[in-house]
Length: 427
Image (cartoon, rainbow, N blue to C red; front, side, top):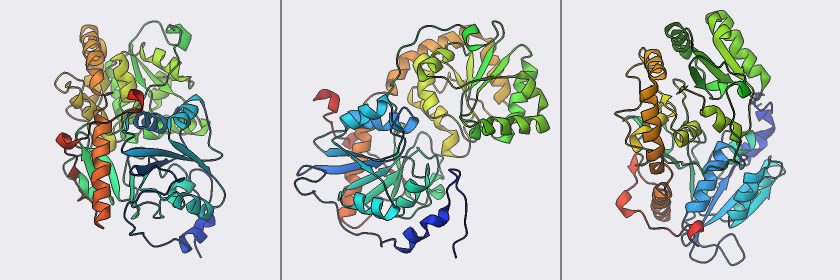
């Protein structure tokens, strides 16, 4: 009997035991053109993405970028999402710009059958481990090519996921050993985001409940990323800058905030005295908050993703230390893509992190110069190059699947072979 194990969503894996029992063998069917009336026109590959975060969420913004930039002469884009998923204005934009959208629901076997009926060429799981439904569906072979990317910041460990799409900028040399999938390496950050933020009126420090004086060290990351080893770094920042303020954002789930505060009460009680907690705000207000930060703090071991793009839009320096795994190397990789590695606040070691943060926060002239450089270099993050490399990978993976093969793990996208695409915006 399968033991009952509770997911973070509070659901039970035991309910899905029948899905595994009926799981079909991996398909060897090569990529194909769907019949008239299906999800794609003749001669165009069907690319589908399935997730439950197609809204103003990091995954939604990644997908919005690709929908806008993919060459529609090569790919017809299908968005698949659970019927009960939360929706907002960005959801409507994604649905409106996709070639097709499919809402699925019911038992897992029914969802499996509904997706299989689409006869897709490529199925893309941006965050397969976000919920039990997407996680278990990923165990099925629903397209000749299936892959994941940094919607989850590590391997899926699922043998039916063929590839993990990443970048040479953010992976360590030994990265192939960390993935059950075949690792594919683009030469740029693999997942730009589309900004979908309504304009906001200017806000002062007092509007956010922040002191008028003292440097602001903002750590706006989800609290599950705050590793216990980061506590010592935060304590050292407090020691080096007695007049500074550490600012954190409360978690959506109150218990997560309370759990972190309880940990600090045991291991670093001074943090509960020095940290200013802010409630979660609308996206437009978050951008205003960025304007009041002297520096941002990138947590060690599991750092920033979308926050990096948001910060660079405003030029706010992010203090970072590249860790062992990709999930702690994104900021440093982004600086490299922007040509800022030599002047960015990258700590040379974990021990140097706090001193680097305080030195930057105290040097107003240096921070201002960096803001100007980052705002100018930001265009290197948001162009169409990522989409062109993405297309090159997809076409190469489809060709390999047609031969009954996979691209070798560690395969690098040949940038000189990237097609010149016709984007939605150009049509």
